[in-house]
Length: 140
Image 1 (cartoon, rainbow, N blue to C red):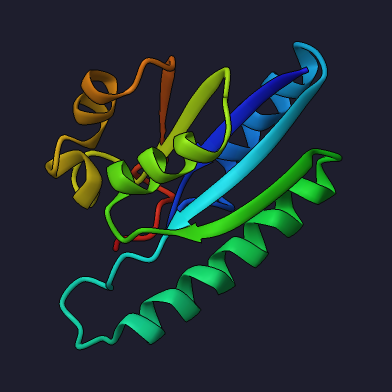
Image 2: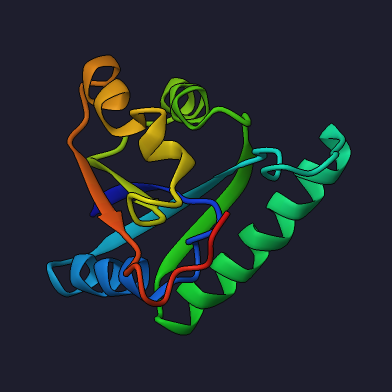
């Protein structure tokens, strides 16, 4: 069984990610562990508690969406920094692939922070980056 670590925030229920999950399931037996970093919202006052609560709400929606696909999925809220969130999870379990889901290039804070390249340099696990369609994605 292939094990996938899915890292997503605002895009955890977006069609591009769910399509990737379907593709992984079609390729063979698969399990997914979703990490939603507790990133603070852009341009708003926030507290750590609020960030974690909002991330938990997104995680719950993601687990529900994956479940409707028939995916074997678990999840957790992670460190606000997506690279650190992945590092924390890789200390606990082994994965065959990391699926990083982002907003499109314009509104994506993660792409502006070069998260894809930073993860590729830091982790010895294949990383697949999937981005939301610019026409349908919500801005962060």
